[in-house]
Length: 157
Image (cartoon, rainbow, N blue to C red; front, side, top):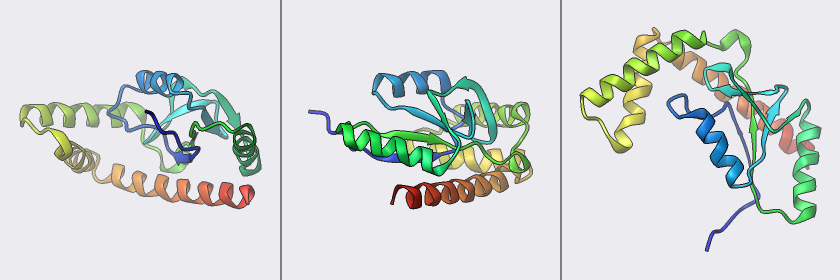
């Protein structure tokens, strides 16, 4: 039996190391709407856009809260994914971060790093390759996500 919980998740997109089109396909298959917060495109974590569309755009916390209330009134059990692009001033150039991620992935494979050790290795190595810019961007997007999530929670009541 599959259990579903009508949660709302606020994030800056999926991990950059994932296949983003496939990630969106899986979310669609599972009935999880992908909401772009003040954006029509799915963010690429460190970059504001992955060049992929979202299902719907909401420009205010109140509009996201309205979607949540509608889901609840209808008794739907799917989660809601609210994607918040990293602020432009904190974003990294897409090509630059992709090169660093690709290099780190290749190094992880060459060193046979697997399982739960992959993510910490990749985060540390990408940070090294970007002169800690990825870590700075990560902190900025986390703060932005927390701010937007708090605003949505207040609007939801």
